Image (cartoon, rainbow, N blue to C red; front, side, top):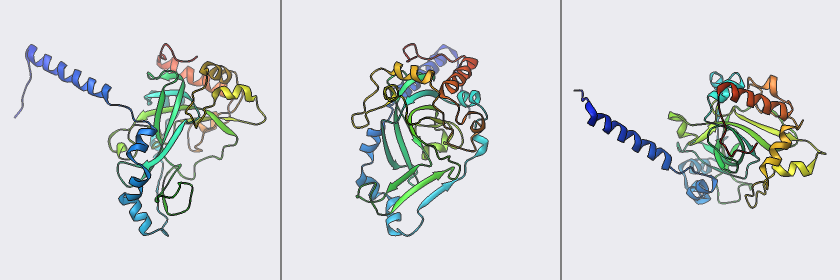
Length: 287
């Protein structure tokens, strides 16, 4: 049996339903690290079925390793940007927390960053953006301090493809998208755009000795979640800096062309990709 909606009344009903759906989408609050930590304190994590299994067999490897789906790696900056929901320049992480994924079978590292510049999306300078990282996570299954001993569990995606960067990362160019379908069982919310959630994070590696006064414009006070006093000073420094960009994955198609490139040139390349797709940043984004 097929039900048809026709006429002005039917159109009005469809418009009303669409409006309600849009309102619901807009009113769902975005979770940040502090929200996730409140939902999953150490006691909840330790009591989870995953951690109970780990503690029952502490001598096991207790790791999940997944290969990167290379078909999901974007071949160039333009494609990576086109497939992303948010493309932003950010400070170093201002907060982070390791928690158990919705599936109950893996762990995820959630990270807060502060926006400096936006190429795609509606993020404004100073906004907090939270995304899930894979392949860097190890959660302790005990009430002891996270850095202490005891059994733990890790999730690795793309292990063995990570480069060993040097120096300190004080800024990041991020390509992020919302998880879709079964991806939400592992990374609800934002994740890196390509490569099963591992392609899309490009840190700027500051070397030493270096112009510390200028670099400090890009730093956060992690203990107080402090945003740089003037983000424009940070972006102006990066726009003319020869500090190198790191492409963390050796299998990233962008590795050969961009790894080690001066950040000023990489930012120009990202801007060119945004311009070619007609993306315009929010009017109050830091420039």
